[in-house]
Length: 305
Image (cartoon, rainbow, N blue to C red; front, side, top):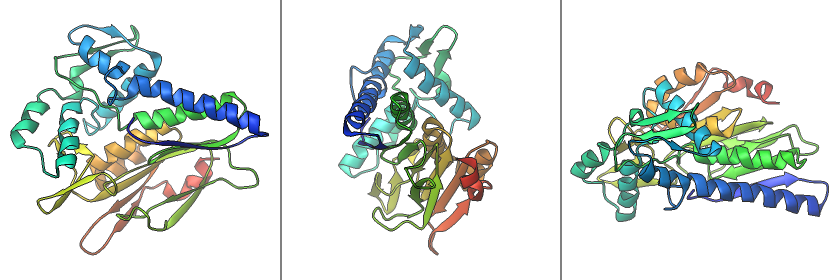
C-alpha cells in the first residue's frame, strides 16, 4: 500500500511472539494483494477493468472497505472519494516532476471521477463502475483497515497487548504490561522530527493523522498536500493537519482525510456528530499554528479503555 507496517506486541515467550508477528504480517500482505492500487494484479485494480457496466463479485475485505468508503463519501457530501484515482495519479507524477499538473489533464481525469459512479450491492456482494477508465484508490482508508485486521490476527492468537502502525495510522489493543495505556504522541506541526506537545494514554482504539508534512509538492509559491479536494481536483493548500481518534482504524483513517478536505469548522461539526470520535486540528497561519480540539477530545481517556 505504499508504506511500511510496524508491529509491537507483548507475548509470554519468543515462539508465541514469532507466530503472532508472522500471522499479522501475512494478513497485511494478503490485504496488500487485495487493496493496493500500486499492484496491477490486485483485486482493486482488476475490478477497475472487469466491473465496468456490469456487477462483479468481490471479496469480503474489498466489500468492507468499499462500503465504508461510500458511506463516508455520502456522509461528507463527497469530501471523501475513492474514485479520484485518475486525478491522484496525476498529482503523484507532479510530486516526482516538481510541477503542478496541467489544468487540461486534470479536467480530463476528473471526467472519470465521482463517488456516485461507483455502485455497490452488499446483498449480492458485487460492485459496478459506470464507465471505462475509472480508477479506484483506497489509500485514504485501506491502511487503517489493514491495521485493524493485523490487530485482529494478533488477538486471535491470544495477544492481548499490541500496536500496529502503518505510517500515520495506528491501531492498538490493551495497554502494555504495567502501564495505564499506549502513549500516543500527536500535535507536532510541519516538523517531521519535532517533539510531541500532547501525549495521549489510550487503549483499544485507533489514531490517524493526515497532513502535508511528509507528502507534498512545493511549486509556484504554494505547498500542495497529497490530499486532494474532490471538488477542485487540487491538492489542499490550506495548511491543515488532522488527527482523529476513533474506535477502529478504518474509521480514523477515512475521517482524517475527509476532515482535512472539509476544513476545521465543517470537519469538527461532522466529528462531533459521531460517538466515540474526537479530533485535534492544527492550522498553519501567518501568526503560527492554531490548535483546535473537538468537543470530546479531553474526555478521550474515559472513552477508550
